[in-house]
Length: 172
Ligand SMILES: Cc1cc2nc3c(=O)[nH]c(=O)nc-3n(C[C@H](O)[C@H](O)[C@H](O)COP(=O)(O)O)c2cc1C
Image 1 (cartoon, rainbow, N blue to C red):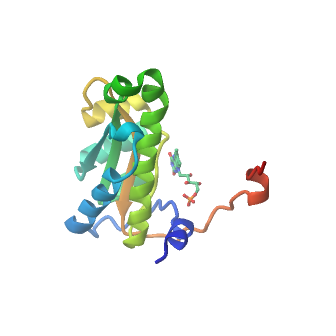
Image 2: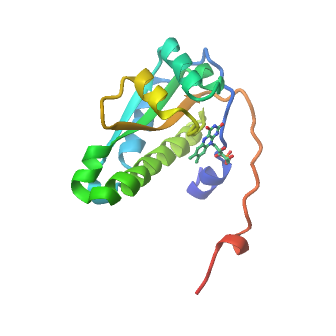
């Protein structure tokens, strides 16, 4: 699959076959894709939780305002950031901007490779941060950025429309 096609055909998937496990080699590839994302100054301030425990998934559903599809996925990744690592190198800009961008790039790598491997995933950002952190057992200074349920898709999602290039591209 060529890259632009993968980018365009990736969809947020919110229904999974819970019993169809993801092969370990593929899960490892997703994590590998994540760590090869760019990061400011190559600081790599990310941490990735790999969650298969059903009770923890249910706790994440509660933290995410009842988004129950999270618990349907055989594996859930939680992408977190070490704020101190980011601020040590770049101060406030590192802590408030770069580390968010770093993890966003890692998240996108995961979503794209998941799609290329025939898996479905969804970037879940709507959650009560302190509740998610405490469910995950994040140490102080570690902030959850995204919850990503991953599994074999049990739905075919249609593409939400994009704004036309002419409305978002500014040429000078
Ligand atoms: C920062 C961010 C937060 C998101 N949070 C949620 C979420 O909490 N729940 C959800 O179902 N989808 C969430 N999404 C997925 C978007 O709804 C989805 O990407 C968008 O509607 C476009 O659809 P597509 O991913 O199929 O192209 C989030 C996406 C991003 C980038």
